[in-house]
Length: 260
Ligand code: PLP
Image 1 (cartoon, rainbow, N blue to C red):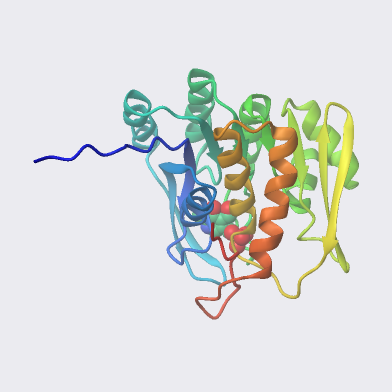
Image 2 (cartoon, rainbow, N blue to C red):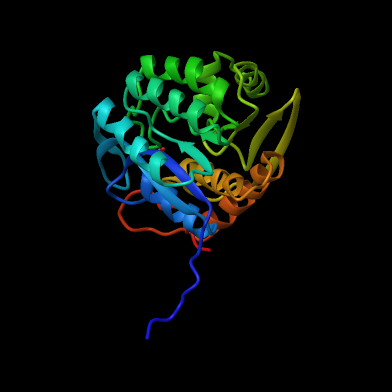
């Protein structure tokens, strides 16, 4: 005799992300964070990397057409509730991602990754320019760290940088301050002309995959129907907790302990 079972229908987040074989950042971080939030991660892989917990050693972009086809098959099959964009491997991928954001018309979070915390370049100037012109106008939230905000906006002052990125069309801008110096970490959240600050004490050391974790947590909360205004501070708080229970799997930097 067969037994009826109740199917779960979790909210889904499409992760447009790169692969970090060490599991601390990129797609692994996205899947862990999204799962910890009670949502389901889908993926369109952008780059393979050679990487350990200390740094990125090489980046190999996925072919643009293959990148696009990954999303096409998912979009034909699955209800996509939100999109998270991390490392983009080429300007062709950025163009295709922009087209999908238009077609899907779902909330989207962009983590405009340019360099790894270990210093290696993950995206060059042409990709950075394409993120500015093609993705910023289409996303609900953009989450640069301080260095990325300065590079993308051309502004040294971080309040000015947040405003300039908002002027580029992102509905919410969250400039994170973990990569700045000082005893306190300050994140700046720009929305509709106002800047709100989230501050907390700095934890010792530096972390691997914090940016990916934050962006995908915001995306998971948006996928579940939260408004960006509350999803952003909630995700900042959740990341701060996960950073206080970090996991170390190699000799390099530890990662957020992403648990439900
Ligand atoms: N590798 C991939 C695939 C990433 O997406 C990222 C960040 O987004 C990194 C490496 C670098 O992570 P971190 O700067 O936290 O070391």
